[in-house]
Image (cartoon, rainbow, N blue to C red; front, side):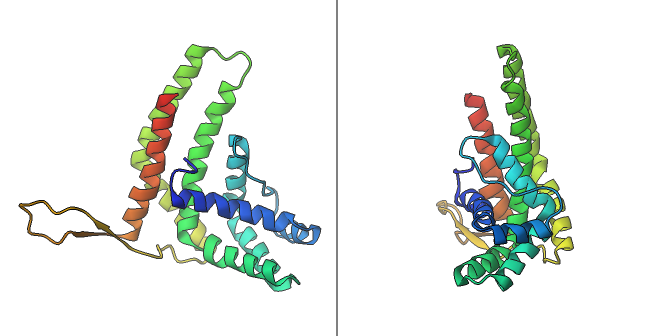
Length: 216
């Protein structure tokens, strides 16, 4: 799922960049610690669901504080590259409503998968129980496919309000399709940026999840 589309790849790259930026020096790590209260950002793992959910969880519940830490780093760092990276991550990523929406979507997805993953790793797990767990996860994602985007939008708007960010999408896309012989319409179908995000990102990765779990 995480490598299935450009927006997903970009999202997790940003999460990793935030971690890498603060961990690169003790002074930068202290700036982060001075701004956040409890949870600490973690590096991503290619194989561990636990690290992925923890990484997203920290940003989800402390997005304003991490944004402030990045802006502080952008002002105080002596390294021009660090200042530039910190400002970019704060201004163009964490303050981007699409990033916040993706963050809430991934948190819900990873939380569901990680809960089942932990159960499957127990030493006394039986195959019939494992199959039922996976069937339950598929059922969850089918419901999530219908309702998850709306709930993620609500959560993201609440975070955006706290951060004084306008909850809008930054671009629109034009979807081109082949015109049928009996049609007399323009072959350019314009979707709102929100609808494009829902179809090309949310629906796509949820379908990837369902397909992957079904094959297993």
